[in-house]
Amino acid sequence: MPSSLSELAAALVAIDSVNPALVPGGAGEGEIASFVAGWCEKQGLDVEILGDERPSVVAAKRGSGGGRSLLLNGHLDTVGVAGMEAPFEPRIEDGRLYGRGAYDMKGALAAILLAATDVTEVRGDVIVTLVADEELGSIGTEAVVERVHADGAIVVEPTDLRVAIAHRGFVGFEIETAGVAAHGSRPDLGVDAIANMGPVLVALVQLDEQLQAGPRHPLVGTGSVHASLIEGGQELSSFPARCALTGERRTIPGETVEHVEQELREIAGDAALRILANRGPLTVDPDDSFVKLVGRVAGAGENVGALFWTDAALIADAGIPTVLFGPSGEGAHAAVEWVDLASLDRLREVVGRIAAEWCA
Image (cartoon, rainbow, N blue to C red; front, top):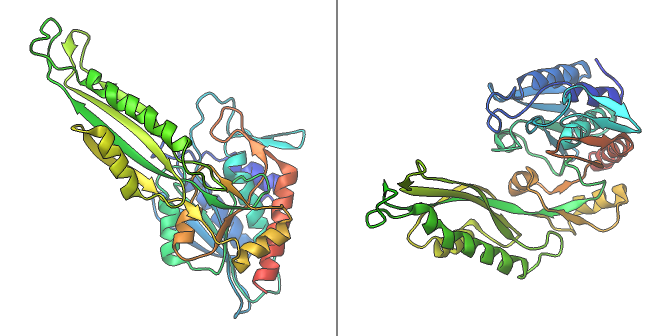
């Protein structure tokens, strides 16, 4: 079993854990969950597996009792590997670990696993939750918050060693316009569903301009909207009977799904609107005692916000004060991905110090 931080991070990168709901045929979390569960058991942690086909691992370093508990969260799954060379062959070069998931976020998983095992002589529990499906449906963290409660939580998504206390949410949507199928030579009979989508696309661009010129959250900026996918028609010589557009509205704290649905219904008009997967933004009280402790120990200056969504919002919604604090690097979801090894060492140190003080 790997024992050093770089060795453990590399071992995790070497395991294919592409999210199968995101990429058909992806390996999923089974192998990597089995690996980390076995590693944790050898380190003397209490281990529980949540889920069968898409497992998550809960590993606890038990305290002596009566202290505050700390939850450390990260995800086992990765996005796909299209365009990558040797994504599961980790390599270390110039202080960087390369490979799929190195930055997002297997390097950080290694750091919190070692930080948890480093902790000694505390009263509270340190609970590491390594979850499935963060890259799409978050079924892992949803299961965790139903079973696990803690007095504070750190989600170790990449933040360049800054403490993030807010991030955006998202609302997925589909708009479908209708037409009338007919031979391309019969405009008297046909109605073009794709052309009918034109005003919708223009209105989405206008809404995005309004949002980006509108109210700004001090940490995460403005909301936004974009078209993601569009499809319609059946062949070259026919009027299309339908056109479907899938898009995404990014939200800021204070914006709700209901508000977004109202915006989109005004744009859709007579077209059909369906609200798809959606998650709320994260916002945490900067004056919370746990947030202040993390900031002091991290020594990272002013709190920041993240533009992307994370499982931190689900944990915070469960009533647990939650921050983001993670390593430096580049290439999340990109063809070249790397994490800075020195930042992983710093992450391990900071998390260990927080655990020692919070759980004392």
